[in-house]
Image (cartoon, rainbow, N blue to C red):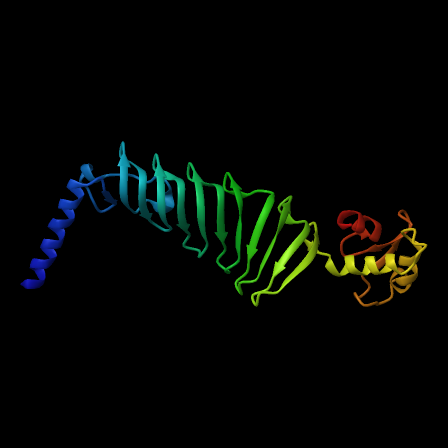
Length: 240
Protein backbone atom coordinates (compact mmCIF):
# COMPACT_ATOMS: atom_id res chain seq x y z
CA UNK A 1 0.00 0.00 0.00
CA UNK A 2 2.88 2.32 0.86
CA UNK A 3 4.36 1.66 -2.59
CA UNK A 4 1.18 2.83 -4.32
CA UNK A 5 1.05 5.92 -2.10
CA UNK A 6 4.51 7.05 -3.24
CA UNK A 7 3.67 6.34 -6.87
CA UNK A 8 0.55 8.51 -6.60
CA UNK A 9 2.48 11.24 -4.80
CA UNK A 10 5.14 11.25 -7.52
CA UNK A 11 2.44 11.56 -10.19
CA UNK A 12 0.76 14.49 -8.40
CA UNK A 13 4.09 16.30 -7.96
CA UNK A 14 4.90 15.82 -11.65
CA UNK A 15 1.56 17.33 -12.67
CA UNK A 16 2.04 20.17 -10.20
CA UNK A 17 5.47 21.03 -11.59
CA UNK A 18 4.12 20.89 -15.13
CA UNK A 19 1.34 23.34 -14.24
CA UNK A 20 3.50 25.83 -12.38
CA UNK A 21 6.53 26.02 -14.67
CA UNK A 22 7.30 26.59 -18.31
CA UNK A 23 8.00 22.89 -18.86
CA UNK A 24 5.77 20.88 -21.17
CA UNK A 25 5.70 17.13 -21.59
CA UNK A 26 4.43 15.25 -24.60
CA UNK A 27 4.26 11.63 -25.64
CA UNK A 28 2.00 9.68 -27.95
CA UNK A 29 0.41 8.11 -24.90
CA UNK A 30 -0.82 11.46 -23.55
CA UNK A 31 -4.22 12.47 -24.91
CA UNK A 32 -4.61 15.72 -22.98
CA UNK A 33 -4.38 18.54 -25.60
CA UNK A 34 -3.10 20.92 -22.91
CA UNK A 35 0.10 18.88 -22.72
CA UNK A 36 0.76 18.58 -26.45
CA UNK A 37 4.01 20.13 -27.65
CA UNK A 38 5.07 18.58 -30.91
CA UNK A 39 8.51 17.88 -32.37
CA UNK A 40 8.48 17.83 -36.19
CA UNK A 41 11.54 15.62 -36.65
CA UNK A 42 10.07 12.11 -37.25
CA UNK A 43 13.00 10.52 -35.41
CA UNK A 44 12.20 12.50 -32.25
CA UNK A 45 8.40 12.44 -32.21
CA UNK A 46 7.75 9.92 -29.41
CA UNK A 47 8.49 12.10 -26.38
CA UNK A 48 9.33 15.72 -25.59
CA UNK A 49 10.08 17.62 -22.41
CA UNK A 50 10.93 21.30 -22.43
CA UNK A 51 9.81 24.75 -23.49
CA UNK A 52 6.93 25.16 -25.91
CA UNK A 53 5.38 27.84 -28.10
CA UNK A 54 2.24 27.45 -30.22
CA UNK A 55 2.22 23.71 -29.47
CA UNK A 56 5.70 23.32 -30.99
CA UNK A 57 8.96 22.64 -29.17
CA UNK A 58 10.70 26.02 -28.82
CA UNK A 59 13.48 26.86 -26.38
CA UNK A 60 15.46 24.35 -24.35
CA UNK A 61 14.27 20.76 -24.24
CA UNK A 62 14.93 17.13 -24.96
CA UNK A 63 13.15 14.80 -27.35
CA UNK A 64 13.21 11.10 -28.04
CA UNK A 65 11.96 8.66 -30.61
CA UNK A 66 14.09 6.38 -32.71
CA UNK A 67 16.80 9.00 -32.07
CA UNK A 68 17.55 11.40 -29.19
CA UNK A 69 18.24 15.13 -29.01
CA UNK A 70 18.89 17.56 -26.19
CA UNK A 71 19.39 21.27 -26.69
CA UNK A 72 17.67 24.24 -28.30
CA UNK A 73 14.52 24.04 -30.41
CA UNK A 74 12.62 26.46 -32.63
CA UNK A 75 9.28 25.80 -34.29
CA UNK A 76 9.46 22.10 -33.45
CA UNK A 77 12.96 21.48 -34.82
CA UNK A 78 16.51 21.50 -33.45
CA UNK A 79 17.76 25.07 -33.78
CA UNK A 80 20.73 26.61 -31.97
CA UNK A 81 23.10 24.40 -30.00
CA UNK A 82 22.38 20.79 -29.17
CA UNK A 83 23.44 17.16 -29.19
CA UNK A 84 21.71 14.69 -31.53
CA UNK A 85 22.22 10.93 -31.18
CA UNK A 86 21.13 8.54 -33.92
CA UNK A 87 20.01 4.99 -33.22
CA UNK A 88 22.74 3.83 -35.61
CA UNK A 89 25.37 5.00 -33.12
CA UNK A 90 26.43 8.31 -34.69
CA UNK A 91 26.09 11.69 -32.97
CA UNK A 92 26.46 15.41 -33.65
CA UNK A 93 27.33 18.03 -31.05
CA UNK A 94 27.13 21.58 -32.34
CA UNK A 95 25.01 24.23 -34.01
CA UNK A 96 21.70 23.63 -35.77
CA UNK A 97 19.39 25.59 -38.05
CA UNK A 98 15.84 24.52 -38.90
CA UNK A 99 16.54 20.89 -38.04
CA UNK A 100 19.81 20.58 -39.94
CA UNK A 101 23.46 20.72 -38.88
CA UNK A 102 24.51 24.28 -39.55
CA UNK A 103 27.55 25.99 -38.06
CA UNK A 104 30.50 24.72 -36.06
CA UNK A 105 30.09 21.20 -34.73
CA UNK A 106 31.50 17.72 -34.36
CA UNK A 107 29.96 14.70 -36.07
CA UNK A 108 31.05 11.33 -34.66
CA UNK A 109 30.44 8.21 -36.72
CA UNK A 110 29.41 4.90 -35.17
CA UNK A 111 33.02 3.66 -35.58
CA UNK A 112 34.28 6.42 -33.26
CA UNK A 113 35.87 8.68 -35.91
CA UNK A 114 34.82 12.33 -35.49
CA UNK A 115 34.89 15.34 -37.83
CA UNK A 116 34.98 18.82 -36.34
CA UNK A 117 34.44 21.67 -38.75
CA UNK A 118 31.81 23.94 -40.28
CA UNK A 119 28.55 22.35 -41.42
CA UNK A 120 26.04 23.84 -43.83
CA UNK A 121 22.62 22.39 -44.61
CA UNK A 122 23.62 19.15 -42.88
CA UNK A 123 26.93 18.66 -44.69
CA UNK A 124 30.55 19.22 -43.62
CA UNK A 125 31.91 22.00 -45.83
CA UNK A 126 35.35 22.50 -47.35
CA UNK A 127 37.84 24.31 -45.14
CA UNK A 128 39.48 23.68 -41.79
CA UNK A 129 38.77 20.27 -40.25
CA UNK A 130 39.92 18.20 -37.30
CA UNK A 131 39.57 14.43 -37.66
CA UNK A 132 39.90 12.46 -34.43
CA UNK A 133 40.23 8.68 -34.55
CA UNK A 134 39.07 6.09 -32.06
CA UNK A 135 42.59 5.71 -30.65
CA UNK A 136 42.65 9.50 -29.99
CA UNK A 137 45.14 10.28 -32.75
CA UNK A 138 44.07 13.16 -34.99
CA UNK A 139 44.68 15.02 -38.23
CA UNK A 140 44.21 18.78 -38.58
CA UNK A 141 44.13 20.28 -42.05
CA UNK A 142 41.93 21.35 -44.94
CA UNK A 143 39.15 19.71 -46.92
CA UNK A 144 38.91 20.44 -50.64
CA UNK A 145 35.98 18.89 -52.50
CA UNK A 146 35.28 16.88 -49.36
CA UNK A 147 38.77 15.33 -49.19
CA UNK A 148 41.95 16.06 -47.27
CA UNK A 149 44.26 18.18 -49.39
CA UNK A 150 47.45 20.08 -48.57
CA UNK A 151 49.72 20.12 -45.54
CA UNK A 152 48.24 18.13 -42.65
CA UNK A 153 49.35 18.00 -39.01
CA UNK A 154 49.15 14.49 -37.57
CA UNK A 155 49.16 13.98 -33.80
CA UNK A 156 49.54 10.46 -32.43
CA UNK A 157 47.72 9.23 -29.35
CA UNK A 158 51.05 9.31 -27.48
CA UNK A 159 51.54 13.01 -28.24
CA UNK A 160 53.96 12.85 -31.20
CA UNK A 161 53.46 15.24 -34.11
CA UNK A 162 54.31 14.87 -37.81
CA UNK A 163 53.74 16.86 -40.98
CA UNK A 164 51.94 14.97 -43.75
CA UNK A 165 51.19 15.87 -47.36
CA UNK A 166 47.82 14.96 -48.88
CA UNK A 167 46.54 15.29 -52.44
CA UNK A 168 42.89 14.70 -53.32
CA UNK A 169 42.28 12.53 -50.26
CA UNK A 170 45.47 10.46 -50.56
CA UNK A 171 48.51 10.53 -48.31
CA UNK A 172 51.43 11.38 -50.62
CA UNK A 173 54.00 12.09 -47.90
CA UNK A 174 56.42 9.36 -49.00
CA UNK A 175 56.29 10.56 -52.62
CA UNK A 176 57.00 14.17 -51.60
CA UNK A 177 60.09 13.06 -49.67
CA UNK A 178 61.35 10.94 -52.58
CA UNK A 179 60.80 13.74 -55.07
CA UNK A 180 62.63 16.19 -52.83
CA UNK A 181 65.52 13.74 -52.51
CA UNK A 182 65.68 13.37 -56.28
CA UNK A 183 65.66 17.11 -56.73
CA UNK A 184 68.47 17.58 -54.22
CA UNK A 185 70.55 14.75 -55.74
CA UNK A 186 71.72 16.84 -58.66
CA UNK A 187 72.87 20.44 -58.63
CA UNK A 188 71.90 20.59 -62.31
CA UNK A 189 68.35 19.44 -61.63
CA UNK A 190 65.88 20.41 -64.35
CA UNK A 191 62.81 18.55 -63.15
CA UNK A 192 63.13 15.41 -65.27
CA UNK A 193 66.59 13.87 -65.65
CA UNK A 194 67.53 13.12 -62.06
CA UNK A 195 64.08 11.72 -61.28
CA UNK A 196 64.13 9.51 -64.37
CA UNK A 197 67.56 8.17 -63.48
CA UNK A 198 66.57 7.55 -59.88
CA UNK A 199 63.42 5.67 -60.83
CA UNK A 200 64.46 4.17 -64.15
CA UNK A 201 63.38 0.71 -62.99
CA UNK A 202 59.92 2.04 -62.24
CA UNK A 203 59.72 3.70 -65.65
CA UNK A 204 60.22 0.27 -67.22
CA UNK A 205 57.43 -1.11 -65.03
CA UNK A 206 59.76 -3.12 -62.76
CA UNK A 207 58.80 -3.86 -59.17
CA UNK A 208 60.55 -1.12 -57.18
CA UNK A 209 60.04 -0.15 -53.55
CA UNK A 210 56.44 1.00 -54.06
CA UNK A 211 55.54 -2.12 -55.98
CA UNK A 212 55.74 -0.63 -59.46
CA UNK A 213 54.24 2.69 -58.37
CA UNK A 214 56.27 4.68 -60.91
CA UNK A 215 55.72 4.74 -64.64
CA UNK A 216 56.77 6.88 -67.60
CA UNK A 217 54.25 9.17 -69.28
CA UNK A 218 55.27 9.89 -72.86
CA UNK A 219 52.91 12.86 -73.20
CA UNK A 220 54.35 14.57 -70.15
CA UNK A 221 57.86 13.26 -70.88
CA UNK A 222 58.30 12.57 -67.20
CA UNK A 223 58.04 9.67 -64.76
CA UNK A 224 54.58 9.60 -63.20
CA UNK A 225 53.52 8.34 -59.79
CA UNK A 226 50.82 5.93 -60.90
CA UNK A 227 48.95 5.82 -57.58
CA UNK A 228 48.13 9.53 -57.72
CA UNK A 229 48.61 10.22 -61.47
CA UNK A 230 51.06 13.01 -60.71
CA UNK A 231 54.62 13.92 -61.66
CA UNK A 232 57.25 15.06 -59.18
CA UNK A 233 57.19 18.52 -60.73
CA UNK A 234 53.43 18.79 -60.13
CA UNK A 235 53.73 17.42 -56.62
CA UNK A 236 56.52 19.76 -55.55
CA UNK A 237 54.73 22.77 -57.01
CA UNK A 238 51.90 22.03 -54.60
CA UNK A 239 54.03 21.76 -51.46
CA UNK A 240 57.28 23.69 -52.06
